[in-house]
Length: 276
Image 1: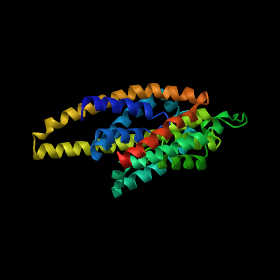
Image 2: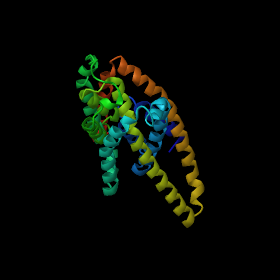
Image 3: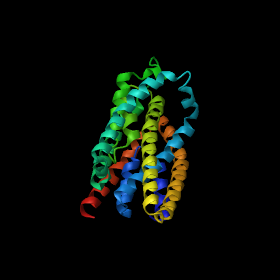
Image 4: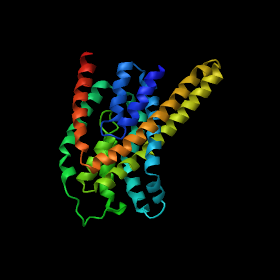
């Protein structure tokens, strides 16, 4: 992979992870154009996701500290909400079906669905928040957390926006916009961290095996590691800006407007995958 390609992937990942336009769909689209090997694209995607994980921790650092204190009531909903995506992820890896998640046609269809979800969820942005409804973490019930978690599990499909699905679902369940956004990105932490850890362990094992069998392969792999680290830094920096921007957009009721990006892009990607 060329250096400029990874730079572009890092920029796109950082921007699209938090905006409701599906980072996986965009990574698949670029991977298709660049003709990147599916296995390598999977490792790149997870590494870039780790960069956006750092952005989440930076923006919500105080709130994360609060999970061990006054906001610890959010821990149970987070645990419940993380279960569906965790189970689905393990099943996909165990069955090998995760290799099918880089299809451009699938990403195109899911981007169109994401756009529709965002558009039909626009009514929620103009609704007044009930002042009698608590906006503390305890306002998210176990049932609501599980349903939001199911939405996140569905977003494992490329092109289906994780943030879009979880925030719209949370708002549909009556969760206040600010808390819905916070909960959505807190849910991403265990999933991204777990995937990053598995990828790191696998990469280190493969590196050790290649070094033991044929030592001269190791130097050839080192530049890829440096490139990935650069990609992580870029996705973290861009993600930090994008997340702060998204929070402001949700407060202004502009969330649904990303449908005008997702639907046309999905159509283009679908046509490209079928006739390109």
